[in-house]
Length: 173
Image 1: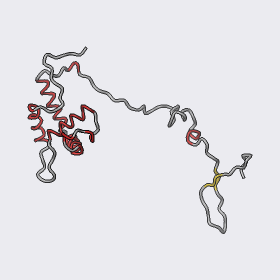
Image 2 (image 1 turned 180 degrees about the vertical axis):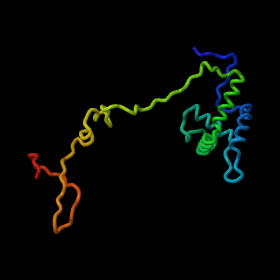
Image 3 (image 1 turned 30 degrees about the vertical axis):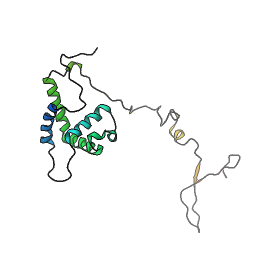
Image 4 (image 1 turned 180 degrees about the horizontal axis):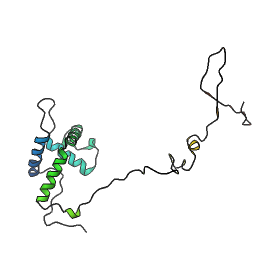
């Protein structure tokens, strides 16, 4: 059973004007426009694109065109992440929501991620058919015996290995 607050806040899909005034101050301080070079994309649209991607889980190149060029939105995301802008925005949003009694702290949950087990033990091979086999059996199940070549006087020297040929009886020639 989910807890409902007396004053429920709407889900954010686009940054509303009152919230944008708070965020714009952070961006002006931490990511001011450069005096020279290529002009940047609209910061509000970039943030809306980042928010849309976070909500939908789509790939960057699948963002709707209304947010601008997908590469530019991604580049903006990377720059903001590197400069700590997103952490500051998050902190400001939490304060705003908390001031509105919109954050129900006792109902918050942490997300987790699953990963590979790094230490599988001796019974783990590269694939299921190799598990339990010795290393040489698993890697080279049909490997032929090899013998080194002999150096011959008077001719070119060959190095390496020559595959031992077998006759019909299985004996080496």
